[in-house]
Image (cartoon, rainbow, N blue to C red; front, side, top):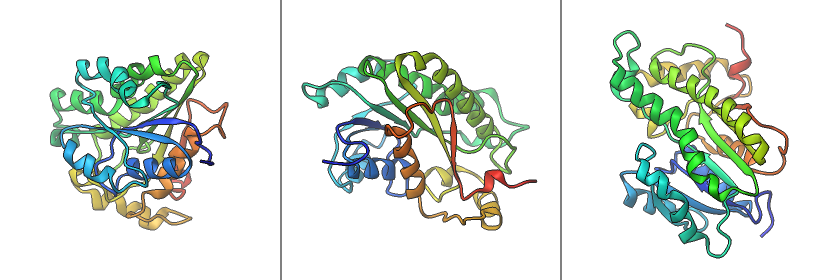
Length: 256
């Protein structure tokens, strides 16, 4: 099969519904020739059902990124599905979670804040390190962020967690570059996804894009962000690492 990911094997996390960026990243990756393996947490039967809507049904591995046993065994579980060639060429980190308390900045307690940071930022490093034994030939790690350069309304400690993710990306790029592994983020605009339903006041946040995206932004279309992920997974960015690529209709460049 031809395509910009032909012959590559990609691990994709975070596929929960067809409205997720991860689903579209997996879909485009398959269309571009990649073999895809999914991970799921909690609702594995749901992930398996959604996986059947991809062009080719991929295997699904259970993974809780806060469970060290899951992380320790991840490489072996990938090998079970990889056949003779057990290498991995790319990772898509589409994992974020903040308890309700994390969406109140002044009253947010450490238990909630630490959960948001662990799941949304630290897991970027821990997932990559769990897969490192399979990436001896190098590869690409791509995560998903929501622009942490400013303080968004309603986002609060999740915004801090995303800032931690963006910093983690730079340090991971620094340390894994000598191994030929690139680490980059896609900063997508707001989307009406499963994750958005957990953000109080999401409509107020998303309304910014209705007025400030010069090229336009569709809250119901995650495919542009998914295509951005696949672009960074490909070999078309061989010397790009530690970067944040905005797929947000241009809102990030607009002044205050």
